[in-house]
Image (tube, rainbow over all chains, first blue to last red; front, side):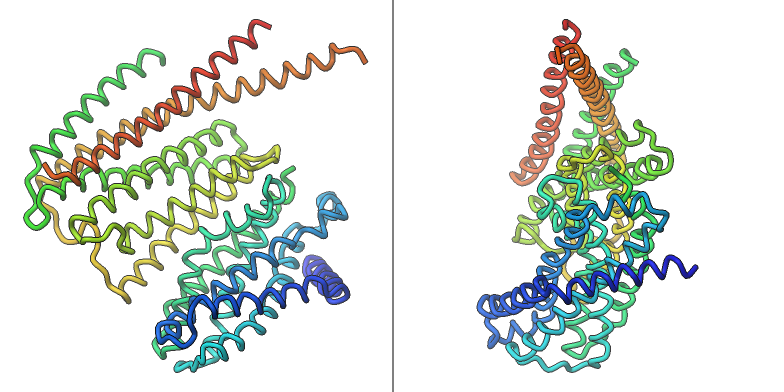
Length: 224
Length: 230
Length: 40
């Protein structure tokens, strides 16, 4: 039982260490996130009363775009060094690799969120009227929803032409219920209304799709 | 096999004509919306047919994942494609109905929005099949189909709940339906189901022929390359 | 009869006929190809 989790942890730590050492991806992603927030601020006037009402939506769309850019290079390093082929012939369970990648992406996107959210709060003068700890739950569940499916579809896109566009093309439609949930939950918490149903929706979405990804990843990994 | 197709085709054509007559003439005129309401008979039947076809896609994809049966893969492809055709009709007739009744072309009402998301999911399925450069495209497609099918309940629930928070008029209305209208609706549904079956059958035969041609071409290039001097 | 009603029904049939025409043209093209392959 310890072997799969050991593999997951080892792969995850390796990825984090590589990212930290190169800092290429982190720096460009952080700058990209800043740019997204600024562009949104110019497109949706932060002073207008309406913008504050849609701030929940704006934050999540910004995170979605940043996540797609991050997800697109999930498997890039593995492809370059033929790691995937090595993984296929090894006895290691496929979903250990998947979990490691997904958790790594989750951490990565969370770092981006940690940068973008304060900027949004400052630019849009947001004052959450509901409990802030609920916002953290929504952030975690929402990010996981995007990342778990995104990591899976990124693996599927590897075997397509136009790899970079294929990921959002596959991810966006499937993510729509989760997106609705994240945005509505965030907006409701900001305006002080109840978000319990939306949080329950996100939780069940996460459970269903994490299970599906774990069951089906082996199939996708081994597909030539 | 070869004779049943034309016979069934003629029967379906007759059924469709009957259903059309029923929808335009026999069915009673609705009180508030008037004649425009008759769009309902085409709009709703297309929606039901699309939904059934997408369910077939889910089952066929599941069968393919378990048994790797090429026929199952073809059924999945066919049902997705024809399902999208019917889904497109729902998305086209919906706004045409909405415009005279509500004054706007698109309302983000529950049914139309859910249908749009369904359409997007299955179009992305076809895009994956088209753009895949893998030798195991059916496998990847079947996986995506499972994801799509799993997503459907979430789509309907989330949009339904959103609409209870932000109510909007619903295309096609709720409430009880006149039994005479129900009768006409069911006739149209039967006619379009037969029609959908015919289209799927034709598309299946086309796909089979396509794969035969591809195999023959592959064999051709193999034998040619083995014949050519080294 | 109502213009929107006619438009909706016509649109439905246009979409069906368009799809069926693509099937027919693909079928005839494939038939031709298979004839050529059989000749070789």
